[in-house]
Image (cartoon, rainbow, N blue to C red; front, side, top):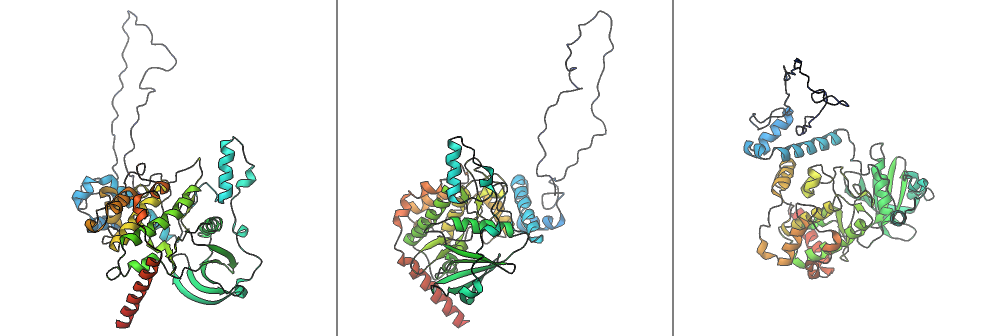
Length: 435
């Protein structure tokens, strides 16, 4: 691409300084000719990006130049050049991934480990014990899939209920126990295989009431079928889409936050990051259950390697350190939770009215704007949201600390969630009839 910033110059010694390994000769009475070293000549410094164009930056590809003219003023570009370069660099990498039809690699150096092995590793490290290397071998797809049962025979009544970036979701029934379940069917490719293995491994080894339950998975003629519990309330987005008519109360927001945090605290305790917290990935039941789903972008860390620097997630919910390409921790999930809180309060995440490029720029330079009607929310709500959205990750609270916040004591009854689900469905039904 083009250089993000000029590299810092370092002072060097060598032929321009004293002779190495020799003492400076004593001055003699005889006259000695002095050697003079001239300054460099014909020196040319190439500048990849400058600030003299209509958009504010020179040296950009034409497509980025046009985007800047649309989304930014020249004053903004000149005032925040580093932030803008970070954002453009981020967006370019995202576009290259789409063009190559490759999913972001969720694991870089560390293989996924189940919670028991992760805990064993920590204990061994504390005691100075080195575990056999075969304990750390990377999980393979063959280690995860069920090679005994035939899913075509045990699951019936496949009805398509949704479609996402990674595959299609069907409602099915297990003939053996008559249980309804969600069947996610994803095509296996060379590019997505590692990501899917990670997703299955994390789902399979994570057992918590606030995480969608994994049931089984199968390799069916080039497709990975993943059987999960069926969440009959859909996702939180289904409620927020009807925000004009169905709004969440303080108690229902607090309830969703508490349940989400309990799931996150469990993941974080095993050094795992979800990396894509948003309303689409929060599933509900008509009994009021709230569970985290979609672990396609989840990452496994270790006690010794507690930071990561790959860029994944959804732009409007993304933490500033992710956008800047800096190393990050599980606190990126806390930022995304804070954005989801604002989403519940106002129907959409902040900056949703802007295109992604400008939204990312505003997040890194301006932070998150305040609520449109802050007076309708209690002080506990405002403080909780501010703690989640602290732009400095070191000062941002973690999941365990936030679980103790007074705001969560305002959580309502699970039945409130069912009421919201029913209202949203009724509105959607009436809209479809009118249309």
